[in-house]
Amino acid sequence: MSRAMMFPTCARSLGRGMPAPAHLVSMLALAALIFITALAAPAYAQTALPPAPYADRQLDDPALEAKATALMHTIRCLTCQSQSIADSNASMASDMRSEIRERIARGEEPEAIRRWLIERYGDWISYKPTAEPILWPLWGAPVLLLGVGGVLAFRRIRRRRKEQS
Amino acid sequence: MKRSLILWIPLAGYLIFLAIASLGLNRDQQTVIESRMIGKPIPGIDLPAASSTNPPLSTKEMADGKPRLLNIFASWCVPCAAEAPILAQMAQQGVRIDGVAIRDARADVDAFLTRHGDPFQRIGLDARSTLQFYLGSSGVPETFVVDGKGVIRYQHIGAVGPQDVETLLAKLREAET
Image (cartoon, rainbow over all chains, first blue to last red; front, top):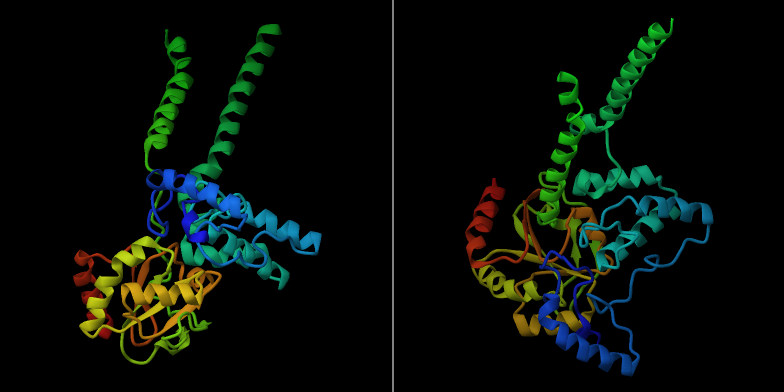
């Protein structure tokens, strides 16, 4: 039943795990949507299974939930690659949210979970910039610009003082 | 004269930034995320049986001296159905293939195997993508080459086509050593 309603959960998907391109099935999907709505049955995007337990359920402890949410907003979704897993409704993002909440509930630190993910997927998975050499210009640019601005301002002020005196 | 030229520098910088940004906007944003687990031992995970016909899968038992393919698939995944005949052909040639069904239901896996063939020795059910995360796998289908010591040697992303068979067989032979 839910099978009829399988279309990608984000506009530009990898095109492999997804059942079919949206434009091909859109007419069919519309018909299926009307059919399914009429029957009021739940329709899951890519799978017959219900979402993982903590995919869309918050942790009972607000402090832990805050930790988990902060981390989820900086972890990139593998399916919808321009979204964080907190914002994506792809099945894999749901599973990853649940995984992160369960790990936080077990007492793992968010940064340890981030490292665990980076170990498997590379820096790509994290939206938080690391201290890798390739990112040194990113960290250095503000300092450099501030320095240049400071020198320019200093020289201008000194010149003005000279003119005044 | 020199001073007025300097005044144009910020505008030039801005235009360069704009050019890079607009080029970036037109580029395809989807990138293939390769696993960083190649060359590392496969994480040991016990998965329950995904089908009625195949035994469950424990990745702890992969260090049995002979290489194999580990195919990540799902009954709800269209490219997985497309690669099924190729995998069946490889299984016939004597390649050992274990399967992992992602977010699947037993009835659906059974129907998938009946319809598309069953090249798998064991099939584990990964109901919540756990093994996928451990493997650094980013979708379905994906096929890993695991050597006889249980070390991940190669990752093929996407459906296995006829043109990929040779590479996979070569990687399996490489994994023998």
